[in-house]
Image 1 (cartoon, helix red, strand yellow):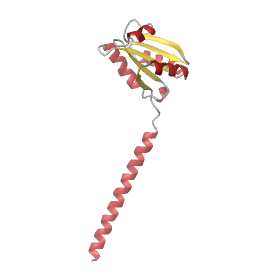
Image 2 (image 1 turned 180 degrees about the horizontal axis):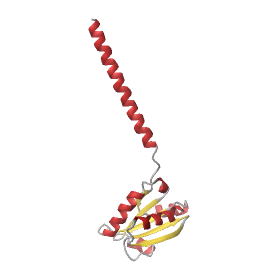
Image 3 (image 1 turned 90 degrees about the horizontal axis):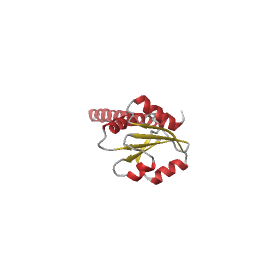
Image 4 (image 1 turned 90 degrees about the vertical axis):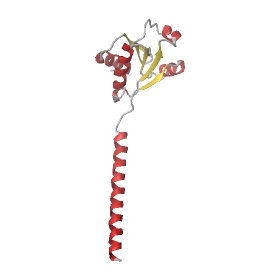
Length: 147
């Protein structure tokens, strides 16, 4: 009988230890997750999203791109990396499809895909066409967030 009690105590101790380790791991993930700042957000362009960002003076970048465009893919890869930077937490990136949103492309005065237009405080701040350097795209994003 005494052996059974000892075995049960050992099992209970291991279960408690396992539970404590699991709780510690979950708490660690929770606190680690909350240490990350909000990242810039990507969304397909809509007139409503654009007008809301302008009205709220949200820092914004319009990315006029095409699925077949290699330069656009390079730009997107750089934007994907930079959007995780907490410095761009308030930045809204709206993607305009060059092929299917021709009136919008015309509205922004873009003559080709791979056009990036930064807005700061509700006004156009900087425009770049065909840039694929991280430093040039970083400078454009900085003009949108005002730094």
